[in-house]
Length: 133
Image (cartoon, rainbow, N blue to C red):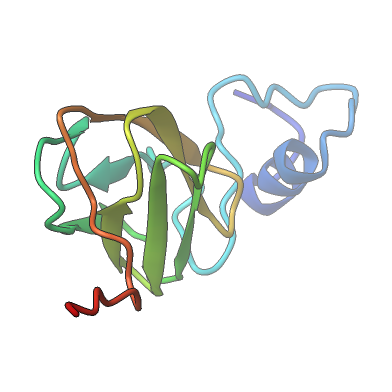
């Protein structure tokens, strides 16, 4: 650890990425939003992968130790799967067959990816009715 800088300066140097003589930030992870500078921050999802074989949406909840902020979730292919929700609770809905990846981000730069596969799914078009004559 550093010898001439107090912990605050060491954390500041790690957070800002400055190279300061005597600053060893290799064992310090920068904290923001009230997070501990030495805490490990990993996003944890209720599912490591999602598979659909029916049109039913699935819930996805997210958490991160020491983190109280919100998450964003985006689909790599909205023709396969869409995502709605906010904070830490999301609904993942199949749209069509194929594979996609959900990208989960927090507001402090952490992220994870969740693979999604949609197979054997037949979706009925919404808002279309058949008239019998």
